[in-house]
Amino acid sequence: MKNNNNVKDLNKQLFSGAVKVLRNSYIRYLCYVAILINLLNWLSSYYIVSRIDHDLMILHYNVKFGIDYIGEVGKIYNFPLVGFIVILVNLSIYLFSKRDYKFLGYTLLVVSILVNIFILMSLGPIYLINLS
Image 1 (cartoon, rainbow, N blue to C red):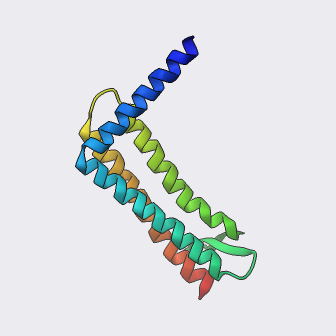
Image 2 (cartoon, rainbow, N blue to C red):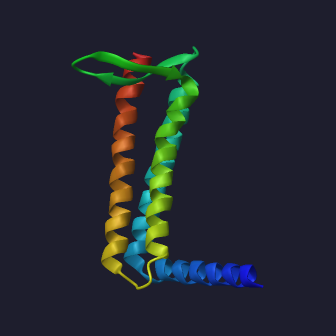
């Protein structure tokens, strides 16, 4: 019986958190932007993988040391996966906060957007290095 109450409490908290996100138009907009940029990360990664015709690719290049990380082609999907995990963790933190801290939601979602923008920017040099 106790486990059933815990599940009900979790469902109630998730529902109230989802309402909290959907109710505020700025947070809803920031959430959409973060998801859109993450989708661009996935599409960019897929485009890079579709253009590579061998098993290995350069995943990191440093100006001082040159190529310092070579991996399998599929490892490029770790970049957008990290961005998606950041979005999920930040949304979870906001959803499970006890009060309606709008500033917390703004901050967490802007951080999610910035992380995904930096990931998108890092995919550009990976494309140029591997396909030029």
